Image (tube, rainbow, N blue to C red; front, top):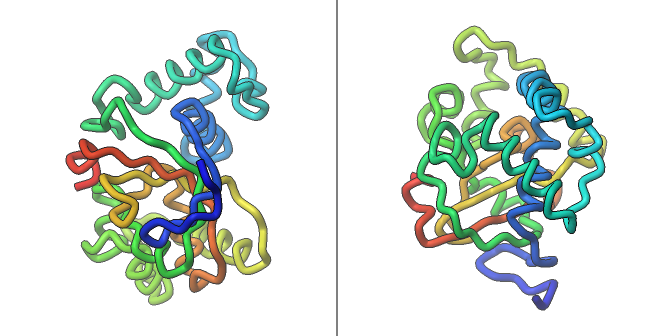
Length: 207
């Protein structure tokens, strides 16, 4: 693939793959306060260490298979359930950079917490406005967003966001909602590297 090409506001920097997406997703979950414990339990069940996720070998078919199975067990990947209900099996994955303007158009997944936080729009900018006004959803503190936004302003690097949609101008956040919200709360100060997956059949998942 030719890198540096801008397609519908997305600057492509290289090819990616299902295996890289799965590895990045699991690493993001491992470092999450909410999901980390579940990932560690799943690793223990299959007798693997965290190195499977923190130092992934993407050319090892056996390791890739175990990671896919982990994501299936914890989030329903490849099993048409939970987060991955209606997620298509054939997806084109790329590494790309999104401008602040394009990142602001990425929507949250359809989920009660994110719907409520964004007042129904599923846009991170609307969520940021409500966070600044002190609105707490379902009694959940906003401190994690504020802390992450400070890190964004300091220029701290984060794992790439994982976005998916039927087209590159109609993307939904698959993994990284906290980070996406932090960028919004910080005012989208910079371009952000992402893994972007597209498929014509993605419209049902990305509704």
